[in-house]
Image (cartoon, rainbow, N blue to C red):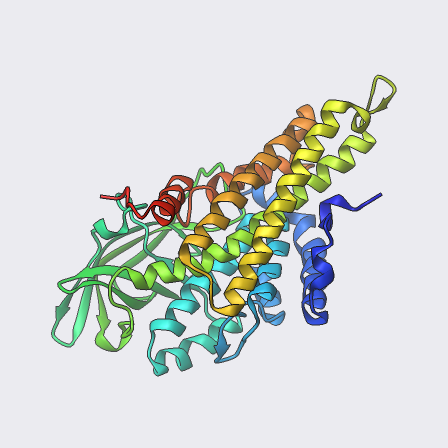
Length: 387
């Protein structure tokens, strides 16, 4: 019987030996270190900080960046890692994304040489953690309307404002904060022990419970000019970082979907009703086949985007296409997997309900499903639906 949940069309056959080894290594890490505790951690709303050093030891932080202790891996390698981590839990992949694709990428792309030398090696080693402060209570899909401000005060900057839904906020050592200045949006590196900087964890979450999500408050936080990201001018800078993270989500969503399909298939083969396994029922087989088709199509999209990125031809609109399709498909797979399991599907003994809850957040963050729809609408019509 074909192992449908892993790779129905044999896409991994084309992986290099290095990428195949990376896949197997990270998959084993998830199976041995993440899965045994993830249901309890989700239930208790706990992120396992003990995983950080192990992930750093595998060279995963900033792995797609060149130099400064980073691995310089290709897009497919990075995508594979995101896929395998999210097969464990979306919160784990989010941690990687915020550390590498957002915080470290912002420093590498827009920081000075001094910034790169000071922060990137320590962040790659997991000795310093980062967060990315863009979203605000009243500025989610419309970051241009952010209210956080930075005004010059002598040779320094004074930052004021609130950032919301910030992954890793309360455990970060350095925060990449985006604020409005007289010259538009600029980026700043803010040590989280700065006077006036406060991070408060958001509790009572129904999703991403095994992940740290925070509200950041900045009250006259004084930042030297030397901590401003010199290459960041305007919204194009933070949005380019988001595009890097969205690429990881394209792959990550296939990991969550694969985990749900695997669980549903095993359950359907084991569960007997009317004296035979429910996998023999036509309606159940239709559900499984539809799930397989969605997952396989998502994997094809992810693979193609990795090829485009490796050639330097990947556009933000194409990333939006992948994020929109793959997260929506993963969410449908998770819901269908839960339905196959009936009442057992809501138990933490099985992964679909946990993935389903997490994917509701992934569906919204880093650009909502609706925003990506409008990005694609503009790409194919040439007309912008944004004001």
